[in-house]
Amino acid sequence: MNCTQMTRETRSMMCVMNELETNTEYVVRLAAKNVVGYSEFTVREVSTEDAPETKEKQKDLPGSIVDWIIGVIIALAALIVLIVAIAIHRRRRARSQEMTSDQEVHESNN
Image (cartoon, rainbow, N blue to C red; front, side, top):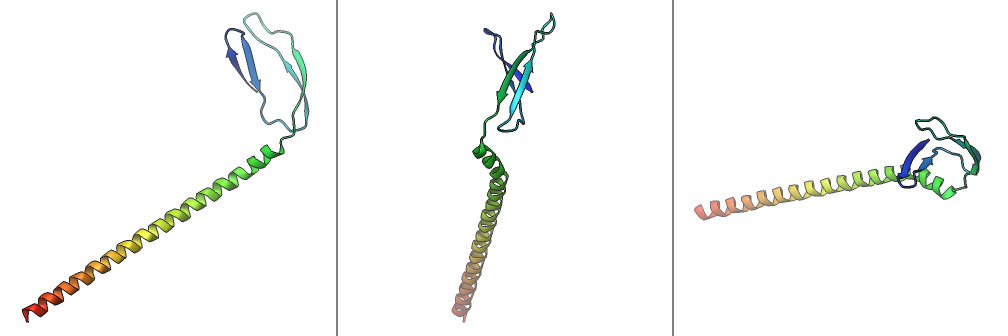
């Protein structure tokens, strides 16, 4: 359980209990401690509510993250292929232009 002080004026506290089961009743006993000692326990019965959409979202989260990572990897791979294809095309074009100018120079010398 994690408790934090909310405001100094009212000296109120908020406690968060994690990993509770849905649709379950709990009996919560809480006592305060200060320099004098412990207070009397406060006892409350509380129940959690059903939240199926929250659980479904939590279940879907890891899969959606994996899908996102796979999508990014595929996009980056496609980008790399495109860059390599452009570089190869430019080299071939430059070589073709060099060969054409070499032929023109050779023909003009003859």
